[in-house]
Length: 473
Ligand code: GLU
Image (cartoon, rainbow, N blue to C red; front, side, top):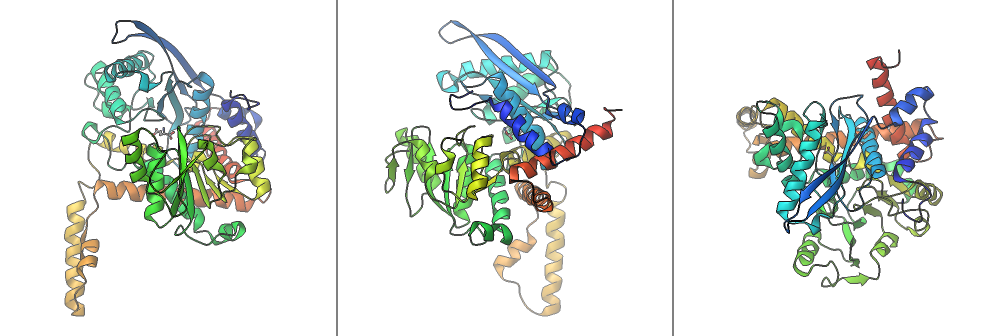
């Protein structure tokens, strides 16, 4: 619980849930069951460090809901990890999956370490031991609970997890589906790396294509020429910035741990990323102005603000100074319930995390399906589609006596690769979810904000699922 926060992260998720529950007709008992974390596993295990010392590591895995199996959610490595945080994040995963129609329950894991303080070998030992502890307690498996990357973890850690799991479960044919976000060579799917950032982009683009919403905010339709600020240049922030810039938006400020930079003419996220890699800091980027504090970037005037780092960065204290028209929550829980109230008063649209950053878990779902089907997307139909399209094109040219341009020819003939299918599945998912939430919001003018409408969508789906399972006879 941070000093300016009157309640914990999990309590703030409960608060948002309760706010939305008022707009549904479900029995209190069902609502209580949805809110509760079903299983919380706190563990301690020893690891021998490179210098010979033994350190006791604190770690967690929380399964928030089993209304669908398996449970799904990332594992974070951070000094800040604690039980309350993992419980909050696991709950958000349940709601997230429900909103985007991904058939999983919510889960989350965390290891309380700063990964920068450990060697690669130490990190590997910690990750493998954590996985072994999960196996012992039946807390991991393609049909039980499927971890993924989160803050501080990536494909490397996922490869260690799948290898440990497979070696402890010899002969399990679906072992690759025990974790997602794996390297391609270890059963990963093309398109997973950029998935969350791309999902953030698809979600905000859909909102920006809604004439009534844009009119209310005093903005023009579309992404082009919008000014964007991104906080966090990790995987999610980097890719969000990239897709906005490539669609004609201007990234006027970027913020990281050590500070923030501003350039009204626009920044290129990759150049800034390379600068940070070379100098160790985002600051002093050629042509940009340094901002005194990294949080200053959150308070600059812009069309779209994307907090893509950690929770609670916009709260009751700084929310009154936020000048963005749209906030796209790429991180999990970046704005507190107090901030939500202030945004509503100030006419700011906050596009909520548990749907906007669902691109990661959506593509994880595609990866899991690939692992269970043991075949790469596109393998069966790519060549067939190309042959068919070539034939159709030939017929069109023959019958019309005209030739299709080379550019169009290539586009029309192309059979889908794995990445094409993954991106299109993600685009469809984000567009449908945006429309479902907006329809709920439009159907009840009492609902104060988009987060509440998203929670209503999630509650209705999870409650229906529980009732259909017959858990409440
Ligand atoms: N850690 C990501 C999230 O918070 C991805 C989870 C997943 O792919 O299971 O949504």
